[in-house]
Length: 143
Image 1 (cartoon, rainbow, N blue to C red):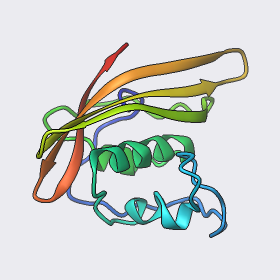
Image 2 (image 1 turned 45 degrees about the vertical axis):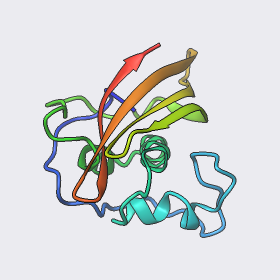
Image 3 (image 1 turned 60 degrees about the vertical axis):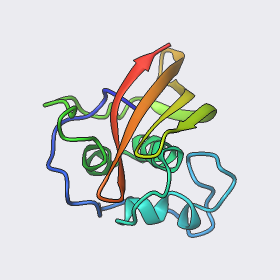
């Protein structure tokens, strides 16, 4: 997911997370418990696929984990300064398409959100690159 956060250095992958009960369903709506889905990635494990990274970034936005979002953004593309908006509630993620090309990949998704006054859908095709065994978000095109 793209622009809603600020800059940080890559290389530090574990972040402080708001505790969720072990059995809580993951915010990415995979149907798995958070502890067996995005939780390990938020704690420093490498996401095995671009889609897994996309889901973990969505969960990070939903949980307000700005450090994680920044650490998984490829440094050449990382913005200098925007913050995750605490007024936005990320409500649902739908993965529409995933294309894996080896060390690059794309994931098309719809992320449903709302705040106090409105609701919306972020429809994006995100690009990812794998460097040293880790996937990183590069850019997204709004659709």
